[in-house]
Length: 165
Image 1 (tube, rainbow, N blue to C red):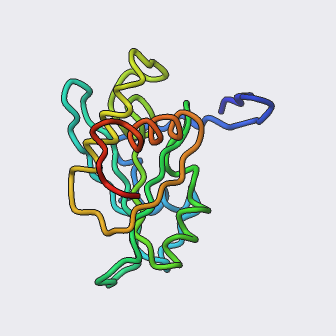
Image 2: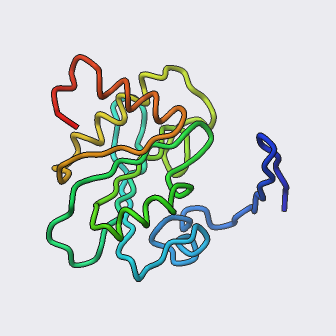
Image 3: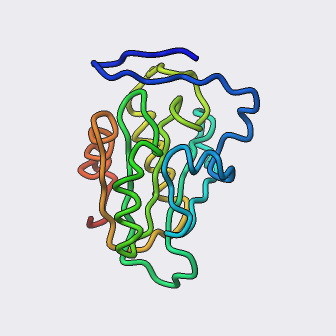
């Protein structure tokens, strides 16, 4: 076990032997991050992004719900991942929202070189790809932190963004 100190917080890094099974399909993974299966489902799929590999897209929603109140998009900060936002995600799901969390390229379960940002526009392009990957229920809302906030705002006010949030 290794202890990490980051901005005054102490974290624990636990080496894992079976990394390919460390994802939301694994009950231990969901429990580790605090997900309550009674709330609904936590699914994940890998969405290919041209020249970037694939980003992990996490979907959270109540089970057997035909209509959502809308979609809450979650974008995390540098050196983070979607599961760290579970308290917000669970509250949104309780309120009937579908939640979409994208692990930025090189973060969380997404592919890419870790902690390397050749071009911040890659993050914006990945988010755009996720937005266009399916018909997300409207209205759309966003919860973002740090790097994720900058990318979402760039996408929202960018020239190609004609949708109303």
